[in-house]
Image (cartoon, rainbow, N blue to C red; front, side, top):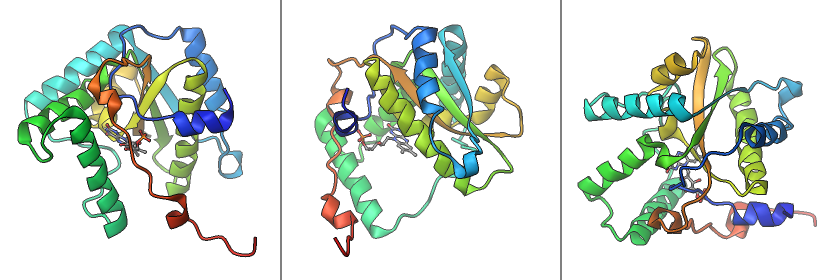
Length: 221
Ligand SMILES: Cc1cc2nc3c(=O)[nH]c(=O)nc-3n(C[C@H](O)[C@H](O)[C@H](O)COP(=O)(O)O)c2cc1C
């Protein structure tokens, strides 16, 4: 697949078929992501992947926490406030999502159902968790972002869809325990990976990007 085609056609997949990729396919995707650039070649990513029984246990414990009212508690706190531009785009996205799903924005039952889908990892057969040593700075978060996008694009070469999601790591201690992740690692983000279920309305959601001209200033060309 041509690089521009891959970048332009990638979108978040939020409903997956149950079939997992093979370990060999997953390793090829991770090997491609491992080529991502990083500050002074520090390659700070620590990567843990779960499928099968391991992922089923994590999913079960996530849902039990949610049903018992345990607050979501990411290792890296979620922002409380957003500047006007990003905030408006977030609202636009929620509206587009609700339109695709045929639900009313702000509806409490719908919000619950959506969070549940997140905490079921959208039915993905594999979740890849991206972690970092706790002593690293936000510059290494940047490196991890590059790794994440490389992983998702590489997945497309194997016909796999993905979504990178903060909710996949909403209960990081469960992930640490189940995957034996050392305490000194921050569980930063998860990427759900697998084959898209094209029948599911969750996969009809389209982000409307702002015109690139609004985000970019070029002088001198
Ligand atoms: C840091 C980060 C956290 C995200 N967390 C979630 C999440 O918890 N749940 C979710 O459904 N999507 C999540 N997303 C996906 C975004 O909603 C999505 O990338 C955005 O709406 C643009 O849509 P697209 O990926 O289809 O282009 C996250 C994306 C990023 C980069």
